[in-house]
Every structure is written in C-alpha cells, then in structure tokens.
Length: 435
Ligand code: S3P
Figure 1: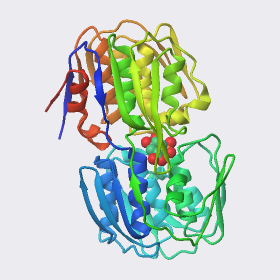
Figure 2: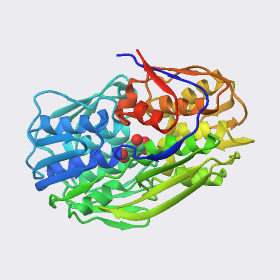
Figure 3: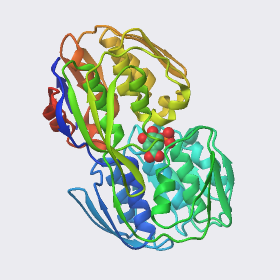
Figure 4: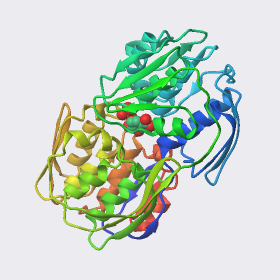
C-alpha cells in the first residue's frame, strides 16, 4: 500500500506529548521474556511493525504471547531451551534489529530456521553477524554478498569468543552476546565506541549476570533468565522529531513525557544543545534499569556545528532529523565518521541529501557524512525511499519551508511510530496522509 504525506508549511509546537515506546527495548523485552522462566509482563510496548515482527517470530516458535493491548504484553516464557522449530521462515519485515538479534539466538537452538525481510532489509549487510557467529561455531548461510535471507542450522556446539567489533553496532554486539548465552565458556565483545546498552541492562533485569569493564562486555554461557516486569519508556528516537520540530519553529514550547534518556541514546540532546537548542530534562527517574525524564524544548535559534564523532553512535538513528535542524541553523554543520548511515533502512546520507536538494538546501554528501549549509528553503517533493525516519524528518522540515512538502512512500512510518500523523497534528504540525 502506498501512503504519501502532504505537509503544509508553517506551524509551531505546543503542549505535552507522549510518543510511543522504545523500539530497541521493546524487541529485547520480547526476546528475553520468551526465553525466561515464568511470566513476563510488559507495559509501554511499541505496537509498531518492527517490534511486532519480533513478537510474531516467537509466536511462530511456540511462545504464548498475549497482546499487545494498549502497550500491554504478557509472555509465558519457555526457558532457554523451550523454543520450537518454526513451520515457515520468520519474516522480519523492515527490521534489522529482529534479523540480527534473532540470528544470535537461533545459532544456539537445536532446530533450523530462516529469517527473511522486505526489500529494504533484503539489501542490508548480514556478514557483520555471520562472521562472529561462525567464529563461535555456528552454521549459517546468507544470500549473495552477505545479504538476507539468513538461514541458521541448529544443533551446533558454540564456544565462547572474544570479539572486537569492527564497527560501532549494538545489533552486532547484541547478536554475539545472545549467541554467547548458549556458548561454552565466556563470550566478550569489545566496542570501538559506546553503543546502546539495552541488551546488557535487560539481561541484568532478567537476572542474567553481565560483566562490563570499559569497552568490554562479557557473558558466561549456560545461565538462565528469570521472568520480570518491564516498563518500556518512550522512544527518544521518536521524540527526536519533536525535539527538532520545536527547536526550529518560532513560538514552540513542548514537553515530551517519560522519554528514555539512557546516555547511550541521548546524543541528540547533546548535539542540539551544542547547536543552541533550549532543551531541559526534568523529573529524572529510573524505569526498570533505564533512565527516563520529561523533556521540555522551546524554540531557539540554532547554529551550525562540527558534530563530535564520539556522539555519532549515540545519535545514530537521529541524523535524518538532525539534518533538518542543520538546514535551519545559521552557518554550516559538518558530520563525519557516520558511514553506518549508508546501511540503514535506506542510504540515509544520499537520500537525505537528495531530499534537501529538492527543497533548495545546500548539502554535500561525503562517504562518511555530510556538510549542510543552513538557510531559507522552499517546499517540494520528497522521496522517502520507504524509510520511516526520512519521511518524518521532512514532515518536520515543513515547519520552516516556503511552501508545502509532499513526501512519497510513508507507509513504513508504522514500523517505529504508529499514530505519528495524529500526534504530529495534535502538537502543531499540519500533516495529511494520502493514498
Ligand atoms: C539498534 C541498533 C542500531 C540502530 C537500530 C536499532 C538496536 O543499529 O540503528 O535502529 O536496537 O540494537 P546498529 O547496531 O546497526 O548501529
């Protein structure tokens, strides 16, 4: 089904908003809940297509799951060895997290299973997980050039591995740690830079010991998971669109409730503040093992910056939105060290550059980043290439565009942000979804 957005120019954001649950945490809650002993109850679960793909995969492997109903999910865990062979390939849809994390878990099972995905996921690299999994003794095949589908042969004996990640990727880290739960001995992952640590925190919440020292995280194979209650905070990656929107639209004053502000995810707040944004965290607290806060953001003039490379993995999903902030800043914003953006749901450097050009924004893509000069821009036609975050970013851009923005191919917004159009309109954007 095709879905396009027509976004009228202008507007400002006001009020109090709760964006949907965190996608990364929702995936992990289902995975560990399914493998735990006992009943896990989740609240705030993201009812987006990506997390639902993970849920359906576990149902297909014999796990009883109730919900989701208004964010509530109940999982009757089957224990580490309780999964059953699925009758069909497991469809991960658009979700790289589902495919990469499930591959790690499947490597330790005693049955065979294949993982497939949509046209976007089918173009994404899987050798990054196949290489370390094979080094642990897993047997798996990918499609040509290391692309999906991924087929994992069960019944292998895995051995612990010490793996230095070649790229800053939480998905690869999590995949290796998940295989490590089934391996003989210790499995350690060494990160080149900190990446989101939800897997480590959630393993601990399920009572599984995790050793962390500096850039190294280790698990010992053969342990057990104990069911627990998980409250999923609002997704900072979804909040990101509103942080940028309120920052660029004069007269805005918006509060986002209950947002996950784990330091391995909160790079956007630091980057926007460095650009001059007026952002304040209040009511800081902990929800499960995760830090959470309300975030108040008010309009403030932004200036271009050179984005520190250390912040890149901590804001990796927020760059499409940050590029819109850069287009509205005075002077130039320079991003480097972000080649991973080229292998997301789309090539986010190229697709964003083309969208910015369509609005008359000066942008120069480079192999590992982009240079953007802020200034006035027009309305225009954007092709999101089916990438949810590109679509939502250009909806935000309309706040300051000289004319309306039409965005093609927006159906995948439902992968991470169900209800985006209604929530955006409530906050002060003017978006119409059209066939
Ligand atoms: C994710 C990790 C990141 C991120 C993705 C979710 C996760 O991917 O882009 O949206 O939940 O572990 P990489 O690990 O490929 O950087």
